Image (cartoon, helix red, strand yellow):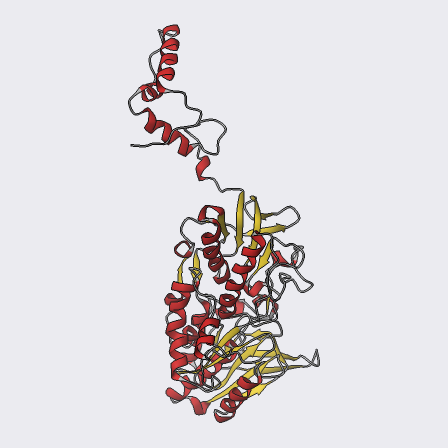
Amino acid sequence: MCLCVLPSLVPRALHLRRLKCRLKLRSRVKMTPLVALVSSPHARLFTCFLRLGAQQASSLQLHTGTSLAVKNYHEVLVLGGGSGGITMASRMKKKVGAENVAVIEPSERHFYQPIWTLVGAGAKQLSSSGRPTESVIPSGVEWIKDRVAELNPDKNCIHTDNGKEISYKYLIIALGIQLDYGKIKGLPEGFSHPKIGSNYSVSTVEKTWKALQDFKEGNAIFTFPNTPIKCAGAPQKIMYLSEDYFRKTGKRSKANIIFNTSLGSIFGVKKYADALMEIIQERNLTVNYKQNLIEVRADRQEAVFENVDNPGETQVIPYEMLHVTPPMSAPDVLKKSPLADAAGWVDVDKETLQHKKYPNVFGIGDCTNLPTSKTAAAVAAQSGVLDRTISLVMKNEKPTKEYDGYTSCPLVTSYNRVILAEFNYNMQPLETFPFDQSRERVSMYFMKADMMPFLYWNMMLRGYWGGPAFLRKLLHLGMS
């Protein structure tokens, strides 16, 4: 039996008495089905139905769909349904209740992108990296399938592409990073040609594997752009995997492997850079620094590079295989918002992740100006800190400074070896395990290929994984 009763409902007897009076005055009018239902023994059930269908309406309307409309206010509004957005939505659900949280995300599919390095090398299937977005949205949290068009933090609201205005009490920005293939002349149209791929896009990652398989002889070129990027180790990971593939298939002697990077070193942390340079020398790989890809002539299989230190000085290199890491930037909607710094990134305190100007706004992941590598591991660590930051802000208390810049980059060096790089803001190693992680290890490869995806889908996205800090203290007996 339904026990729902509208607060304004008069006692049933009084209600029936009034109906009888009206019927006497309108004796010629037959009882309508609606009146019959109200007058029936099922009146309470009908009243319950009306209440559920018209909670937001000013009057009862059987033909309206008001309860299905998108709410225009949420206590916590999350922008972005990637790793940071879903993780924080799960954490906020536990804090304020699912009905008070919403996620704005236009994409139908959610991807675990770190595995694309292995997809591009043929070690994993692309299908293993994605799931329907609906399946990762926390139960009860509203999914607004739309795109953010404008942010107005002064009025605590955002606007969407579909013209909706949505207000919030607290805003979490997790919009990720933008791939700017179009800033390289000849792309993205060049991907319609063979011999070229990119592990950074779902539409081009399998082309990397095809180019690797089709390789015969000549230059295999791998690039690193002159911008911040997500997973800064990925551009060279595919180089090591390709070299391993060429050795396994008997093509290594015919391959001239070139890594052209806009940077001045192979890696930002000296301990791991030294280990990588040993591998580069042992495997006879060519590394050219301060070289930025500016054009791809896919019809002629030529790549054009510009000297970063001497703009205008270019070099054309023919290729048999080309892996492109695109330039990247903050999403355009952020660049033009009051929430961005001069470079377009969300301007947050690097230790609390709270916005520097708007105290009810927070950022996480690739879209922020946090001075650390943009990785899923960094997002995990940031999520735990941001959870605590928001808890304190909700209590009108000052956030404590906790995030030390922890990030991790599993540097895949072959089909069964990984150097697990972990470090902080100061580019100092911050290793979880009590052994030298700069050495190539089989165990670290299996952690990268199998354990981390499991942890991502089953722990991190559900708000239960905030990075390995507790494990590090345990394994180091509390000394780190």
